[in-house]
Image: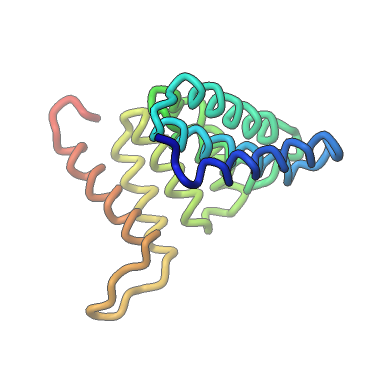
Length: 178
């Protein structure tokens, strides 16, 4: 069965591809297309089309890497490639080792002040089995988020970082996991 969102993601992808043909130097459109292709891949995977999902996921990650590899790439472009490289579906396409230098550059370009970049760095570090470094990155990310009031539920992003941090701490305690 196809997702009800599938026609919309396909239309959006087509619109971005047209825009890229009209203005091939526009990196914003190219970056949006890279993200959209990975969203389409996730949708394809969930609708029983793994072969096409792989094609779209690889294309999306490759576009993001092409942008991040530019000598003048910025923080957002490095973050985007690192994020896609550690979260892309199907999971066997995830490449934390390739993502790591881009995640580090995204953190560096933000002067260590972007909790999202730190979170992606932690995912790359954990993907490489370095749970100690991943914990440090997540702790730094959390320290940059607004403190919670007593009884206040954390925002979704903060809850995600907290969950990853708990998972990394658990894995660090497991034998042969660090």
